[in-house]
Structure formats: structure tokens, C-alpha cells
Image (cartoon, rainbow, N blue to C red):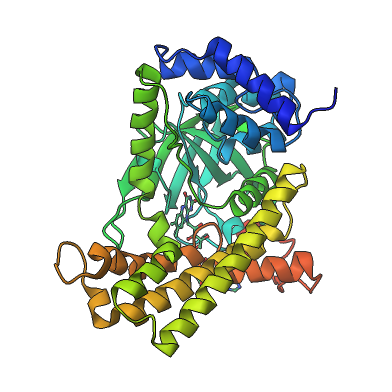
Length: 412
Ligand SMILES: Cc1cc2nc3c(=O)[nH]c(=O)nc-3n(C[C@H](O)[C@H](O)[C@H](O)COP(=O)(O)OP(=O)(O)OC[C@H]3O[C@@H](n4cnc5c(N)ncnc54)[C@H](O)[C@@H]3O)c2cc1C
């Protein structure tokens, strides 16, 4: 019988009704989901899935929620990267605890002088017996302060050209050679960190993809990041009370703490019209014009997101809609900040508990958080470059160091 949304929902519902027990621990429940293939039904059967089409993941997650059970956790960026790039012993070691939530991951890509130009990284890994020894510095690493493992790219061959001497490692975060220092942001949150590596150790075979060929795996992570977005969804549906629900709520609270400013970063389009109403400026023709512009831009951006989602659900590989969608989000966020500032005037600068602060201080947080939208996950300029080169077929940026050993190319 062909798989349809209706038949799938019925199958999931029957399974959940037979297995969901709110008295279970979160781990026990997630293990049941995983072993039954419901955590990631679109993944191959060998790797905890059911080999279903990509759209099944969403349908299953929603149906589990409708049954008032705890849903599975998203596979993030590490999950799909490891699934795609392997090798098998890495899939075996890391996918299960990632999907049960036992091991939390962070992304250790950016460096002080390698952000947009990520392949210019200089963190170095040298093989020493059965271990790699890593030295260098990473920066802007979201959640590194509570992660167990890091997706880390480092240079393993300085004599190869820039993109060819890089290896993608799984770094154990809890060790003496890894020092995580939280960064204080201008919006007073502290969601990312600097990570210093001083003779940090990685087991020899904790390599995603192949040694020296980590750039391919890094591109896979970045493509998922653009497509998945940096938006973070946390389950908020009602769940039958019990240990699993309590643990899931505590897990969600810890996640939300890091990402609590992300809605403000996106501009809080939802607050624009209520803000104008509360300020009594809905009849102002300039405000109306800017509000209309914002609402239209946001609607178009949502259509782009829906197109990207539809492509993903059809199992298509990430395409230009990731960069287009990301650019659209940046433009919407900036327009939202402009509208809020127009409505709030000088009061928009009042933050925190000040009784005159519009929207209880949220407005000030919007204005200082919006710039991050154009940076995280690859800046707007980099998205333009990707679209120019990959979608429009324009010439690549000139690279005078092309093909040279990175040791020499770096100084050009
Ligand atoms: C909220 C947030 C979360 C983040 N989380 C993580 C994380 O978890 N892990 C991680 O590793 N990193 C993370 N980052 C870092 C992020 O990936 C980098 O900030 C981003 O890639 C830009 O790098 P950069 O900051 O070094 O800027 P730079 O690369 O120094 O860029 C500076 C400016 O130059 C422009 N520019 C650079 N190169 C070009 C070019 N070739 N053409 C045109 N313009 C160019 C850029 O667009 C930008 O305006 C995060 C950043 C933010 C804001």
C-alpha cells in the first residue's frame, strides 16, 4: 500500500498509543522511539530510520505531539552531516546518543581570522600515535559552554592547497586541552563562546568523511545550516505529565536560554502592528507605508521558506533557496527594526526595566539583536557570492593563491 500522510499518521498514532507511558524517563522513551524508527523515519533503516520520504519526519513529529507524547529531538547539523559523510564507525558511535539527546553538540568552525573565508582556518591537528593533537582558537561557538562534542575543522596538511588539507573532527569538549570562555554580547545575552585548544586530544578515527578531505563535510554542514536556518524550534505542545515530560521541559528550558533572543534577532514582525496601535500611529501615512512594506516582505519571505521546505520534504538536495531565504530573513529583520524604531522614536533606546521602555524593553533588544541575523550562518555578502557563482554561473572570485600549498598561499 502506498504511504500517504493519512496512513502514516494512523500508523504512528497506533504505535504511540501502544508504547507511550508518561512514567518513562525521557531517555527510555527516546530509545523506544529510536529503536522503532520513529525518531528519524526518513533515515535509512540501518541508521535508526524507516527509509521513508523526507516529508515523513514532520508528519511523524506532529502526530507524536498530537498524542500528547514527548517528540523526538531534531538531528541538528551534526546528525545529517555524519549520516551523509560517514564513515560507518563514526555513524555507529555518534548517531544514537545524538538522537536520544544524551550528547549535545556544538559547531566549532569560525576562527578569529577565518569566518567568511572558513577555509583559511589555521587551527592545526597533528597525529600523535592513536590520537590527533589540536592547537588553535575557535570563536562565536554557540552553546559550546554546555556541549559534550564539537564539530571541528582543522588543518592537517599545510603543504596541500587551502581547501585540501582540512580534516573534520569530532572533538570531546570535556578535557583539559579545551577551554571555553563565554562572550558577552551587546544585547547582554551570552550564547556564544571562544574556545581555546591547547594540545586537545581527539581519538585517531573520530574523523567525519576522510582525513584531509574535511572541506566536503564542512560544506555539507553549512548547506544544512543555510537550509535548516538558525531558527530553533522547541516543542511546546501539551504532554501527559510524568518524568519524561519534566525532563523534556528542563531540556527545552536549557536550550531556550541560549536562544531566547533569536526572535528579537528576526525583528519581531509579529509585534509591529500591535506596537503601532499601542503608540496610536496607525493613521500616520509614513508608518502605514513602512508597515505595509514589512508585511509584504515578510509574506514573500515565508513563501520562500515554504518552497525550501517543500524541496526538502521531496528529498531534494539543498539548493539556492537556502541562500535566497537567508537573505530574505535579513532584509525582513532590518525592515522590522526600521519600523519599530520609526514608531518608538527616541524611546526605542530605553531598555530593561525603564517604565518608559516600549514593549517592556523588547524594542531595544530588537534593535541591537537584528544585526546578527545578517551574520550568523554566513553573511549576506557571502550569500550573494554563493548565488552569483552557484545559481547564476558568474565567474568565481579571483584567488591569487589558488593551487599553492597553504603554507605559502597564506602570506600572499
Ligand atoms: C548569532 C551567531 C551565531 C554563530 N554561531 C556560530 C557557531 O555556532 N559556530 C561557529 O563556528 N560560528 C558561529 N558564528 C560565526 C559566523 O559563522 C561568522 O560570524 C560568519 O561566518 C562571519 O565571519 P566573521 O564574523 O569572521 O566575519 P568576516 O568574515 O571577517 O566578515 C567581515 C565582513 O566582510 C564581508 N566579507 C568577507 N568576505 C567577503 C567576500 N569574499 N566578499 C564580500 N564580502 C565579504 C562580510 O560579509 C562581513 O560583512 C555565529 C555568528 C553569529 C552572529
